[in-house]
Image 1 (cartoon, rainbow, N blue to C red):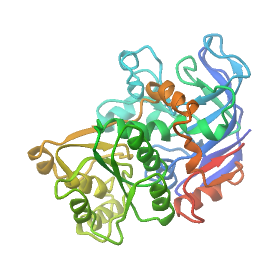
Image 2 (cartoon, rainbow, N blue to C red; image 1 turned 180 degrees about the horizontal axis):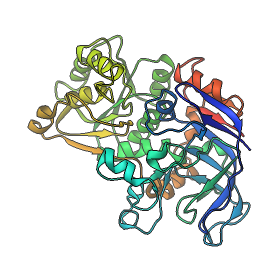
Image 3 (tube, helix red, strand yellow; image 1 turned 180 degrees about the vertical axis):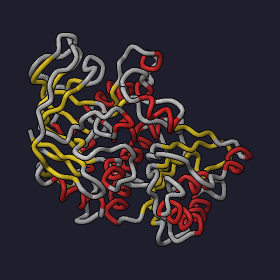
Image 4 (spheres, helix red, strand yellow; image 1 turned 90 degrees about the vertical axis):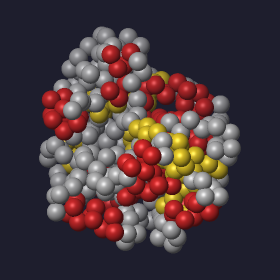
Length: 389
């Protein structure tokens, strides 16, 4: 089959690789009908995710048609259309039983590697390094889905791939980001990063009752899309974000902030962002947390900072004094996608949201390497890429 494979920084190739096979009774094989390039895939593309091996198949936003079923996956049959969560979860361990599927204790066969970095291992993920299991990803013609009796959700008749594909990751992630904010009527929420996850967070914040959403970015197309969803938009290259948020909130700060950027934040020439860049470039640091620092300072006393941007290692110069003295709550996670799927599928069926609004580019797997570059460099007004194998 054809698949997109990683061969180093900025080197994604469309290659022929062996077809996947059933390896466990709870596996299914799906024929991929749609997959997407995620913003977190760009961390792989930029070479900042450790333990990637040359030839690894990438991608974790995937859906398709079941073509082979293991004897233990009795909930699915050949011909079912399914969306596959990016988190691989057994459904039986301590964390899965409590709905924390992204903390699954069983699905990462390389958990000892993750424990050395993080203390404990999260769940295995599709196409996201050997640190998180070494599983083949879904930017391919076929995908093996482990624990398929727990993960995939069937797609109701009448819904297009484009409407439901993002249930695999960015819609639940954006919704969780807003859910973490414990939104009350009248609340003002700030979202840093108007990429696909940020766009879903903006929509979700309004769905959950926010009165105002302030969206922070600098890419015109992203700001325009955020404004179309009803957000107040701020361009961090044109204005001081802290001062503007103070103005918009009468000096109080926002009720909650969402960091939908993560480890590769771009600063505006501020001293802290410059130091971040120097440390990462000289291997003295792993992440650039400029946005997280700003979100902390812009959140009101006893507010919430919701973090869904990807961070990989150790963060420097986080203003914990501000957070502690002002009573901030931090909430963060890799999204336990299965926890949110029934609720969000129901919202799509009812017409409350159509996640396809973020799609700007569609192509084939052969187009994938070029579209990775287009997406990473924000060329051609690119916000979200969908591939059709």
